[in-house]
Amino acid sequence: MAASPAHTSSRSGPVPMRRVAVAAFVGTAIEFYDFYIYATAAALVLDEAFFPALDPVAGSLASFSTFAVAFLSRPLGSLLFGHWGDRIGRKSVLVASLLVMGLSTVAIGLLPGYAEWGVLAPALLVLLRLLQGIGLGGEWGGAALLATEHAPERSRGRYAMFPQLGPPAGFIAANGLFLALGYLLDDAQFAAWGWRVPFLFSLVLVVIGLYVRLRIAETPVFRAVMDERRVARAPFLELLRHQWREVVLGALAMAVTYCLFYMATAYGLSYATSELGLDRNSVILATMVGAVCMAGSIAWSSAASDRYGRRPTMLVCTGLAVGYGTVMFPLVDAGGVVGTTIAFTIALVVMGLIFGPMGAFLPELFRARYRYSGSSLAYSLGGVLGGAVPPLVATGLQATPLGSTAVGLFVSVVGLVSMAALWALRETRGVTMLD
Image (cartoon, rainbow, N blue to C red; front, side, top):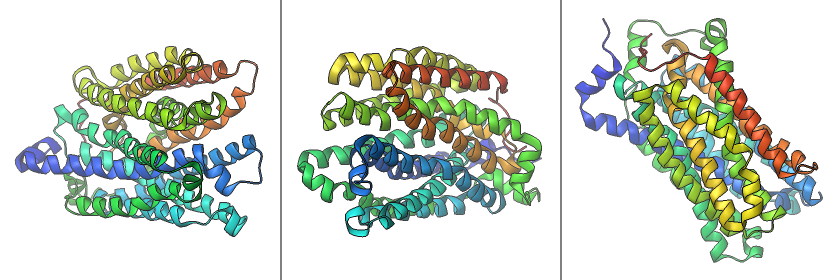
């Protein structure tokens, strides 16, 4: 009988598990840093740099559309990297995804604007954004499997916390750099070249990430699959044949986490600065406060899922999201900088409560033969539904008579859809990862 991941990990001692946790965390932090600097730049400056011929509303829509492009390409990245992750292993594919994401990000920082290259500039921006999405589409699933397939069964949720902490860490790093630039540069300098600095800094982070990831071992679960000659020849086709339902429901369950996050960050930043006239740096700082608190809620709920179960923990916390959507933007409208900070912090805390257990839940839903493909695709499709669509829909809803109230109600509706999907899925705590 093959050894369980817990047995394999425990024989290795605590040092290898610490190394795995660091590798899962560092990789997702870097990749999400790359992703989030674009979200912040889209809200602040990309419409002027690449779409200057459009009016402000159309420019914002164009900027957020290029933001959405990467979400649409993430499922493609999940299929591409998921196939090879299930065929040749988790480690090498994670290295490749980091390179695709990092080099695309650096290229955006070097790309001339519309004033220099005309329509070619936004066209190349869209292409590079597509590549960013493809890279990120392969990242999360591999990092989550790196943690869960090494972890002892009873603490799988706790170890799966580490890739989940990557997004808030990447967000804090990205916005902290933008915040520093906002204080060091005037508006003209920031618009001319300052916004490029976070993109170029990604090259340093990629080197660090490669160093960390090249020092980890392949997961014991995938090694067992190879030893037993159970590697799938066509993982995606097997996934669709046997577990397409889990892919769809997993994506719907994920949607509310993305919706909360990007309503409080990308769309929230644009709304608070352009519609309410709040200071840009103050709003960035507000979202950073929220991201710090979000990291705490991820850690708590990840550990709680080991005790109470993944599904019960996420169902209760998704119910909080449904209720909170109705008051989120009225709080922003009424409270100025303080109200905005409180509103965005609560949104990100609730998001973290749902997001934390997902690090173990999605991988546990799928069989080992096509687990990389299944968990990555569910996660990425959830991003399309909850991350790409809501900022675009919110821009239209904001123009209706209900204004920001309609935006908040939309968040509640997405939460109800996610609750229904979670209710239809099975509990996964305690399942074997070797199946």
